[in-house]
Image 1 (tube, helix red, strand yellow):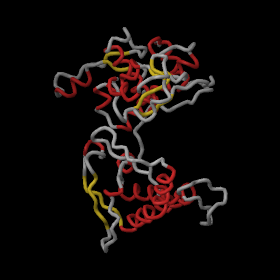
Image 2 (tube, rainbow, N blue to C red; image 1 turned 60 degrees about the vertical axis):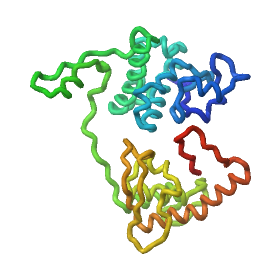
Image 3 (cartoon, rainbow, N blue to C red; image 1 turned 135 degrees about the vertical axis):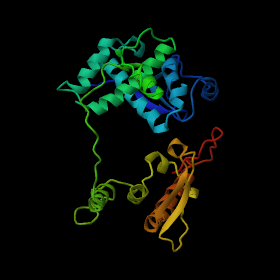
Image 4 (cartoon, rainbow, N blue to C red; image 1 turned 90 degrees about the vertical axis):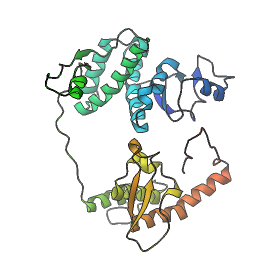
Length: 322
């Protein structure tokens, strides 16, 4: 099967101008519409191959359950749901999300996992994708948009009478009948520090195996990317946490300490787990060099070109960092 038409994932509200709502694009007051529509700033939304915004479908991303999830988890759900909707558009006679039937879901399972011309994803990957699609259709049924979900369900056997309350309540409920069982225990991959440095220098900094710059390397900000990778490796910060750090929150001041601590704000920490992070002095110096040189150049170019401006946004929003 060839995918010709794709559903796309975007983020509210910065990318709303290209969409149509109710078939009308011209004359829409997007600011007023966003204030009245059930959308959340920073939440994902999906657009059809015709760039149409379905209010009912995207209401899922404003639901209480979705808003309680981490931002990266929400976007992962959106990508997995968009993949299924793309399959409906391309391989199932252009069916809409509210026209999907059980045979569509089973055909998607076959294509994703077993079709020789398909991606042949692992059981763990399929279960992750299935969880997103299942949650969406369970929400759609509860919201009254559908009578039945296209994802077949079965009852999980209730827990034993001697089991605790938590065990009984989590086992006695519906589960997708198409969950994969061929998943083993996840191994923990390790890479020696020397191997990591080779990967960083060749893949991120653009060096060859002799440690010299490659003339065909197309990376624009290798010092930024290398500093980002080194900081993550040495501090074990999560991707979302590190990406949301503001310059003022990072320890750029030089001193004689081997490790420079800073407080990770609860607002950007996963699960609100604000904590003290200790950065090795060498890594802090690497980040500081990027801030003084490459980042300063980018900021100045953006200001000169008029693309960087103050935009406080809704209350509580954090300013974007270049």
